[in-house]
Image (cartoon, rainbow, N blue to C red; front, side, top):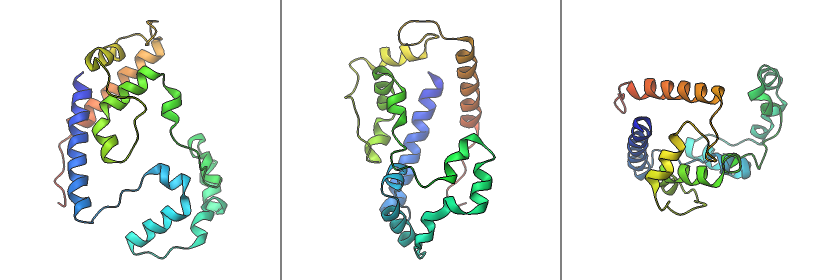
Length: 173
């Protein structure tokens, strides 16, 4: 798939940039999973990296009136009005079947390794067949996709094509 190949190229460029900047000490790898599972210690590391002073009140963001008001505006923001949900990650693994997880892990293998993510599966025996199956207009059981799902896939592909068509901006410039 053209889009999949372009995303892989963009990921490789991003990892190369990350590696360059990390070796120079100019970036901090801060994983979402670490932030939610070990919020206070991860936030202290972030503050140290930024040269900011940590304050325990940083963990009380959900009690601020402005945050509560903003959280009420959109369903996707509702968790902002709560303390950090410490197990709110890895949902993609449980929302996909094994073949889909294996395909995601195959496509993201270099990034997962570089960023310290574990794989549930080894490399697929036939990656091209697995990816081709995922790109068909049917689900992995062979059932036809709904019209809504086909339209959603079409919209996603169009957005990805527009994003990938944009010129890359020079770093630091």
